[in-house]
Length: 153
Image 1 (cartoon, rainbow, N blue to C red):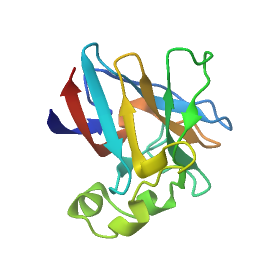
Image 2 (image 1 turned 90 degrees about the vertical axis):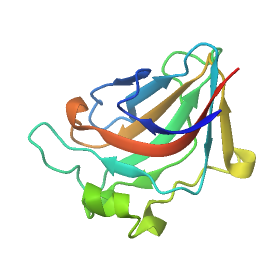
Image 3 (image 1 turned 135 degrees about the vertical axis):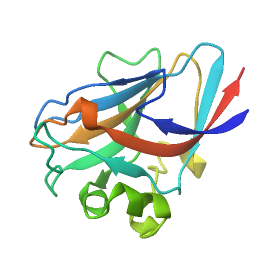
């Protein structure tokens, strides 16, 4: 078991362009065979999302974490957290990493979908960062970091 960071740069992460105006995964993590991932609510996320010309997403944009299990229909994600992009737009990556203003960036899970605030994902599951925005996210610019535990099973 190792404490690690869930990020868009992991080997098992894939970035995507969103569909403007539709909740769309921009990063998906396909849990590797023989491993399990656990994420726990309450930590501050580090997020930087830009459009194709390098502008922050509009303040009306929302982001969230979602998961999908093997039996779920195609493109059917269960959203477990949702927040406005605004707290991330107002802080530089350096400021987010320092822990300043962390309270506004703490990830909270929907208690009906993740009782106890702990999500365990097996190697057949997928996790996604979902974006709802009127503009497209540049997949090459995506920065997302959140604590996770990666365990061999």
